[in-house]
Length: 137
Image 1: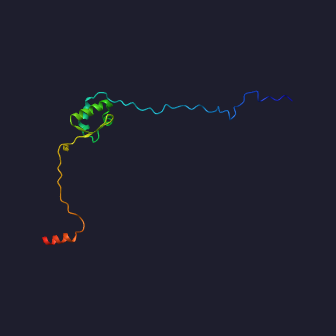
Image 2: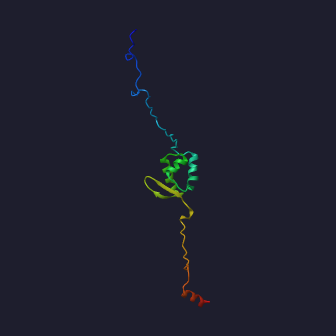
Image 3: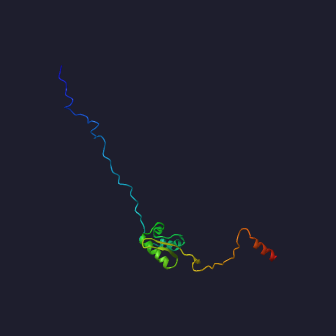
């Protein structure tokens, strides 16, 4: 009988505890934000929209102008300053970091006077009040 071949001297399969079976995890680059292509100077269309539409907005901030008019932030701050100087919008809060304005209304300058009306007390009348009313009749 011929001698048996030695199995251990040849190539052997890695054992399950070796851990060489899986490939390395590939890291994703994450979601990339689209670059905003906002205008740096006013063109004719955005300049007309600034004076036509913006004074009708209820809330006016630089971020709203950037979003709606597609202009950059510094241009939006200058536009707000210009509209406020012309009296088309009025300030609510002027902080160095956030400017908040609203549309200016025509009734701002008019002072409304309050007229006081005598109010009669509600509820049941006392005996003295009933007696006074009967005397008047």
